[in-house]
Length: 465
Image 1 (cartoon, helix red, strand yellow):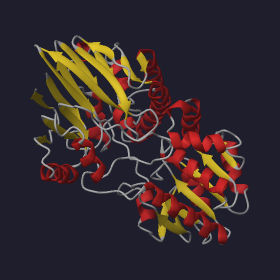
Image 2 (cartoon, rainbow, N blue to C red):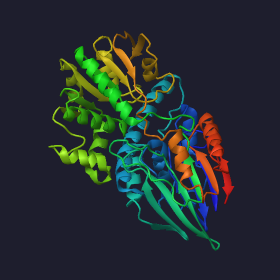
Image 3 (tube, rainbow, N blue to C red):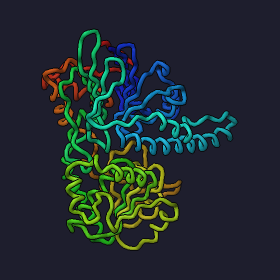
Image 4 (cartoon, one colour):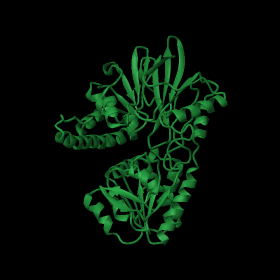
């Protein structure tokens, strides 16, 4: 068996790992590489393997860095099965359509500039139509049910936590008279996250391909983050303000809604209007609510005592889709909570809410996720006094609060526990989906725990097992 690491190797995005076994080729994930525009465009257009030789694609979960390059794969000739859990296939369909819309809009914007310079127009990385076509190749699967994916290879998806439907991919292989198990973690979730089950630890794995995104950093308990959220909301409401939260549409928005629902039910915060103002987030939440069987036991217990039998709906919660509904939020007087995309405050409706509320000292801008350098979200997290929104400069008077601990990724301690679960059977570990500092830190931690050998493969490198 060979493993070729064609993405998320010594970096975080673009997950693509090619397994060659018994004359078949299986691709684990087909993620979009996200980086500088020119580099990303070329890298995502070019696959470093023969697409027509692929027998199957298996997806760990719906995030774009794990699924977002499927439209290019199909456009360039792959017409085989794409296996994933039921909820993942549904989420990916919605997210790829949104990504296709963004690619078309970005190309249109860039082409206006290129036209002024007399340059030739560029094509979008892929279109909405390209994204829609992927849907016909999905093969939805249940958790914990084995299926044949190639000669001598049985696959199954096991819960990984992280987001709804996320899975580790387990391959049980028979090759040349030997049997072994390859376990691909996907993105490892955390214990005690709302809605999603805790990740299943590797069982009797011989080879482990494991993420190391936070291999250098432990996380606080999610309940501590929820308690801090409660204090921020109470403090803001006491001064009559609004809480404005830039939030990613998948996972983070639903997590916040769940916590706020719980707090209002328990009476720890007053019942006030909560607006989720992001068409994608609303669509994703609809899908979450279609698959309650994927929720964890705590969510089911919560729903059983909720008079609306819903984890993600309550009377003062408003999901807005249309532009008119979004604009109407500006007319609301008095305290409210507004959750809107994008999570780094670079595009989308959140910019309008920030512009309308940033100069009021009663309000709070709440940062609940990592913010990339040079984004508006990072400038707000750094508490800059003057920021530009839509090209105009605004003086920030609103309070800015950052809450760590909401990450859906496992921290260092959980990753060490994850690997240690198969300590007795492991022959090799491959660390992916992490920058060099986190990769080096986790390698050292694993060696200290006497879990080895550990490899941190480079991009397009190939190993023989």
